[in-house]
Amino acid sequence: MSEPSKVNLSEKLFAPRQTTKETSSLVKLAHVAANEMHNALDGDSVSGWYRVLRRPQWIWQGVDPIEMEAVFSRIAGSTAKRTQDELLDTVIGYKPGNWVYEWSQLGSQYQRKSRELLDKGEKAQAAEMLLKASTHYGIAAYPHLKGDELAAQAELQATVTYKDATELMPHQVKTIDVSYQGKTFQAFIHLPRTDVLLPTVVVSGGLDTLQTELWPLYEHYLGPAGFAMITLDMPSVGHSAAWTLTEDTSRLHQALVQQLRDVPWVDHHRVGMLGIRFGGNAAIRLGFVEPNRLKTCISLGGIIHGFLAQPKLLNSMPRMYLDMFASRMGKNGVSKASLISHMTAWSLKQQGLLGRRKVDIPMLAINLKDDPVCPETDNQLIALSSRGGKAISLPAAPIHDGYHRAMQDVVAWLKEKL
Image 1 (cartoon, rainbow, N blue to C red):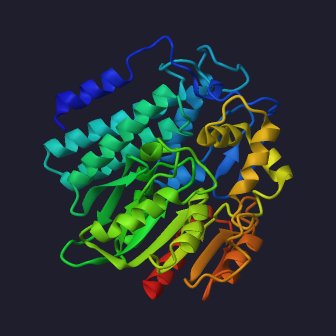
Image 2 (cartoon, rainbow, N blue to C red):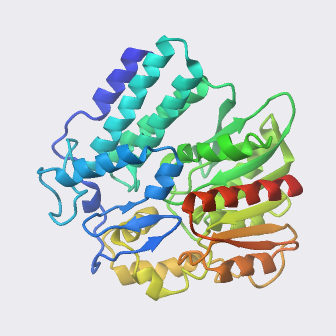
């Protein structure tokens, strides 16, 4: 994309609009009080903030901790009008202090650095800066609620800068258009080489993650190990926003793996799936519905059964997560009780998949100890429900070590099974 058009895109996207709704005002759930929570994978809900602040994950994705805290303090210090005075990150409109604005400003700074590096002919560093820009635009759009215009614009920026970054890299990154129910969604395929057919890992993150944020998994783990990585957004998020989330969490993944035999570069006889958080639910489910197309499935901190089967736990979720689930299901304005009663349908045990019979492909389930969302009992259930299955529980601290060790275990498992 030429420089003037990039600048124009930014100006056009974020042109001031009087009618833009602020994120926390979009999903009107009845009877919801604010709850606080902490867990190692997702970060903390902090009193006075609408969003759950995912510090460990964002740092792991390459966000500078000092810049991040500076963003938080600018948001906290803003005197602009808020939707709710007691929630700092509810500043209305695209202006200083607004969440989307502050993170997008940081994204555009990295975009500028990238242009300067490109002018000096430093392609590799320019690509790195564009990836950072993409990460910051992705965080600007978090938690990706339907109808959030400013977030949608930041999401577009995240995709544009991601694609611009990939054009400057030695790795090949190609786009696959997958057809499903008369519409299409985009998946990205990351290839360390194109001269041979590669074993391939399909990867999805949680319901609050864009596929452009999964790059570190490829850069540090899957690419160096010689795997192709195909990413796709979960239903109702990013490129998959056209579909609401139903209990068939793996329907888009199923459409993708069915189409893989038409994709060059991929050895469709050697395909596995890795899912993180809600992506873990889709990964394990896909193993049950497509055992002939997959060699293995891996759940990392997956939301599988235990959490979904306990109304008390669901009830104690921070409001942002409740809003996010409601948005994914296309249920605005319902009561909290009604929302929670629908969520039990996502349990893979409730669906009759886990704990009934053994599926013929080996599955790996990994969690960090004392994770309220992914208890060890879920891991054991997965391991027992698959031939050659395995459950691993890792120490939760230090958190970055937990991420790293989990991915080392994932790669070792994939090398063995693919």
